[in-house]
Image 1 (cartoon, rainbow, N blue to C red):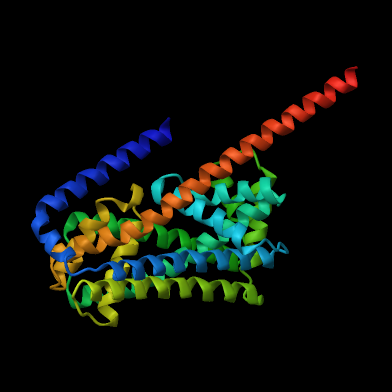
Image 2 (cartoon, rainbow, N blue to C red; image 1 turned 30 degrees about the horizontal axis):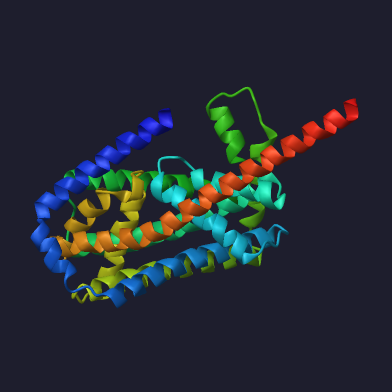
Length: 339
């Protein structure tokens, strides 16, 4: 109930921001900005978005292989896409996509729970690191060129960035000192209970983030490759909308887009529009172009998220059927034994 309430509140905030931005920019201006965008360009954006998902799947497969687990790319792609839909529609559920991926691997591939969860968390940490680097470089250039954003936007985005920066920095500080993060938090919250499972997961994560192992560097390479595709998608889309900007300005647009994604609102509704209207206006590209930019990106991601949601429910029903079948089989065996 609490999670549903959080979902509802964040969705209402997103809808409110989205409505305000649409009224601020105006439908006619948005329509005019859309007119320069053609069908084949939309296909290019969709392909680049799919490529990001494929690289993410390849990265996850490599992480699992480093743990001694070799699972087919197609199976992982389906699970990864389903996890993506959870993060897209329910970003307020912390590690929701990662927990789902670990659970499915356990049920379908008989993979130990700790390995499945650890591989998904490692994948997320690699992505967070890449995103933070993009945000830092792009935002610094933007602030040096343009100046500070509006106070409210600055507080929301700045606070979100600092939170993730602090969390990631703390993680790397602890991991390279080989100090347990789980034990730290248990002591911090003065917990009397120490579950072994989180420590096993932590051990798997620590084993991956070892500078002496090539797997870690492969993971960073694939994470930054995915970030490069994000950048290409940004640059192409801005160009498709009839605006020509250089490398660093494209990076600035992408950095604010990544910042907005960190705010836990379903599909980044409203917060992406608010952020990009400010960025595009500041760069002299027009508020309407910024709004259209976010709508097209969200549209491409929504298509894949809906496909992921279909896979999510299909996997769920299959697991339910398997569970019922197993239960019926167990009951029959018990009845046979009694007879």
